[in-house]
Image 1: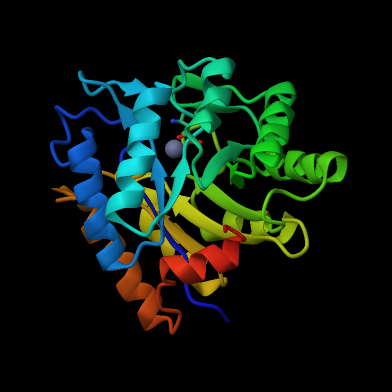
Image 2: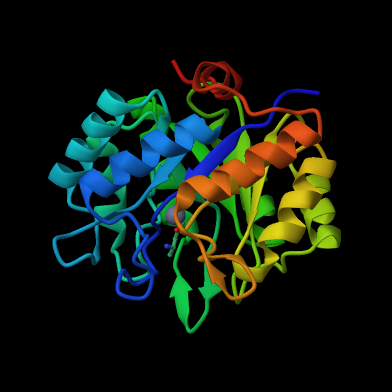
Length: 272
Ligand code: KMH
Ligand code: ZN
């Protein structure tokens, strides 16, 4: 049994800064959060950025500055979101790789996303996957539904293994419109993964804790953060990302699978 890979999804594209003041939206806030989260046990940071009005943006210049600032202030693996916001177009989402991150998210299918649609048609998935291979950016396969696992199998069968050679997935559970965040669904999804794949899981909102406990018990890894939940417990807003990482790290240590360091995580994920 390995240690636990902890990813912090610090900001996301959906939460409103006015309603969640602890949300890191400036580069200064993001780097400060990143330093705290590394100290608390995170090895990967999943990054969405905001513009001067705290709205989501995929501006490549800002993304480059973000990658540079995170590298200068932490050892964290920098994983840029290619999902962006539901309003982002496919070309802008492909251009995220121009910021030369260590890693990126790659969602394996379209999913209803509350009242919106998070669009990931096959044509976009395969273009993005081929670009990750060309650029040597290690993808993390985001799976919001069981059908996405089938598309992951198709992707690997048609285009071969990813940059870094290792398949690591992230089960994003409990999105309204995606797979539910419960242990039975988690086990079904894990059973369907390609042989040799490793996986993390995160549960949105009130599914955070059931998914976290289920993932630890089933030998998986953890994603936590304010992209996925804004409350620490019922009615108590999170004070910041670091306390979510600290809770995950404490529970992982209790499960005899303490957090991986960023260097261990690089080996594990095949990131140079
Ligand atoms: N914001 C969601 C529409 C990703 O980062 O790759 C998509 C998302 C997935 O967050
Ligand atoms: Zn994201």
